[in-house]
Length: 108
Length: 113
Image (cartoon, rainbow over all chains, first blue to last red; front, side):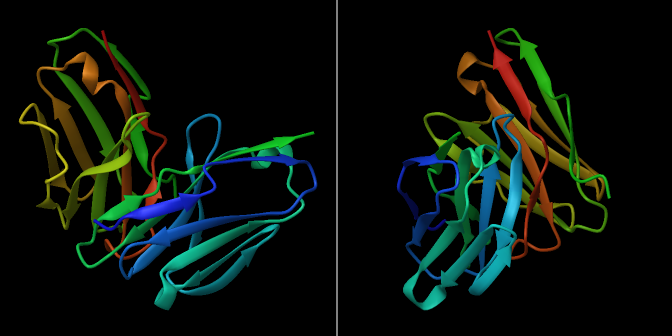
């Protein structure tokens, strides 16, 4: 599988702040997903975004496939946004490889 | 749709016992994946099936691990005999195709004492 590098590893935000999470991948991808793992351990699908830009409420994501990176934007953060955000990509071997995650803590 | 269903949600067993984890994928999905999550290694793919056929099991850690998919709506991951280092959260996921969006079940938290 590909190598996926996420930054930053940890992020502490004040409620209402905006933030950007980054994901770099070592090879071209056919599938790029962002997940949120909530405090109960559930992996929630945020975006399926092999290229381009998508928005869903206060979250948006952009993948620049030619430069092998993806960004996740969180605007007006809320305490419910706390958790671990994972980026994962699939290359030609059809294996979804995960980054180490960014742990986000939003303080009231 | 009910999403990916996994059972049990929690399993506590003693070293040496056989453990069987179960998964029901989303109806209509042709690909099924088993993952393991640990603090040390993060989320890693163990094995995946396409149209009920195992395609890549290179992530299965040892011969103690085996997985089957007897039909399109059911898969099992078996550990025999279990060891304390197998303690982890095991996720099942499904998709229409490995390149398409994968959807994860709630996971099974396995503790081997």
